[in-house]
Each structure stands twice: as C-alpha cells, then as structure tokens.
Amino acid sequence: MNETKPAPVKKVLLILSKATIENVYACFILANGARMEGIESEIFFTFFGLEAINKKKLNDLRVATVGNPAMHIPTMLGGLPGMEAFATSMMKKEMVKLDIPPVDEFLEILTASGCKMWACKLAMDMFHLEKKDLYNDIDGVLTVGGFYERAAGEGSQLMFI
Amino acid sequence: MTTTLAGKEVNVNAEGYMTDLNQWTKEIALEIAQQEEVTLNEKSWQVITWIQEQFKNEDALTIRKVGKSGVTDIKEFYELFPNGPLKKASKIAGIPKPVSCI
Image (spheres, rainbow over the protein chains, first blue to last red):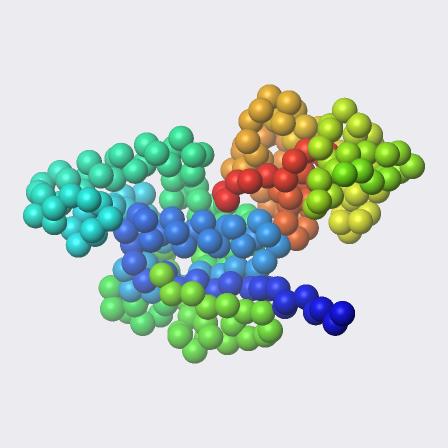
C-alpha cells in the first residue's frame, strides 16, 4: 500500500467584497475557524467589504432583504421601509443565542487569534477613506498585487466572498 | 476503544480524545501534551482546570468564552496551545472534541 496523505490547507486568504451581515459573518467565521484549526488566515477588505472595518459603519451592518430569494418573502415586500431593520434584528437575536459576537468584538477576536487583515488601496481611494477611518488593528493597506504576494506558498487557498 | 497513557488503561475515541474524564490525571495530560507538541506551564494548567469546569457544567466551549473566562485571553490561549488551541486544550483536558465553529 502506498497511501500518501493529501496535502493540508496551510493558509486561507479571504477577499470580502460585500458588507451585508451574512457575507461579513461568513467571512469572519471562515477566517476564525481556520485559526482554530491551526491554519493561517488573512482577510482583504475591498469595495463594500470595507464597511466591515469602517469604524462608523461596522456595528450597523444589515441583512439584504431585496434580491435574496432565500429570505422567502416577495422582493417587493423586502423593499418596504423597516423590513431590512426587522430582518437584521431577527438575525442578530439568533446569533446571540449561538454566542456569535458583534462585528467589533469579532474583529478583536480575529486580531487576537493572529488573523491578518488588509484594506484594499483602490477601494479606499474610491470611497475617500483614510486609515484613521478604519478599525485600529488592521495590518495595513495593500494593492491587489500585494495581497496576491501574501498567498505565496504551498497549501494557500484564495476565496472570494 | 482503550489506549495506554502514562501507564494507565484509558477510554478514548478514534481521534484520541478521552471519553471518561474520571480517568484523567495530570500525568495523562502531560503525555497527551507531549504527543500534541504542547509544553504546559502554570497558566496552561489553570486553563485546563477552567475547561474541565465548563465541561462539567455542560457549557459548550468557544473561543469567545475562553476570552471572557478571566483565566486567559484569546491571544495568550493561542500561544499556550499553538496550532488549534480549542482542540488541543480539550484533548489535554480529557474532554470531548469541541464542535463549535466560533
């Protein structure tokens, strides 16, 4: 028998491009879950994903109720005033039950766990954001090329969210 | 299934997690720690005791709870039990593998 063990994932690099709660939490849970398994993890915040590290916005992220068939409500109803806030508060209640932290605390957990976090330079320019507008403990501002360099090495995986 | 740890026969599952905390001793913990390439210091033992208390109280273990334990913080927890802290600490503490994703 000549069985070789498959090569393990050593590093996951997540690109977060959206700031709806479900996307941000998917990204954070994947990044944190990797660290919990002893896998390196990094997040590149680009386009609307930057809202997740924007000090003024990060604790006010919402669920998308329009254009989301999995909500099982008609799109037109999803667009009514208050629907987004209602769906968001429902989801937040469920998350509290599962001991899922709010965004600011989750960022602190990720920092403490050794997850590296980068802001996209182009998106920052586009949204007129400066480093002082962002969560204090991000590791820096990178170009796309700079982020790809960080993916070097065997066992690295890139994921777009 | 059973295995021999620190000269004692103990019940474990297929992944080597102990299935009976009553069989746990410090000597066994030291041997599991050695297998997992973890060096235990005074703080590690405090964390292990805290983890066992959580298990006895039937509280599911998460990284967040460890951070709020008052015994250690998350950064230190990662340093004490490198490469998968929650799993390694649970294994050494003689409790089942944690099923939490957070």
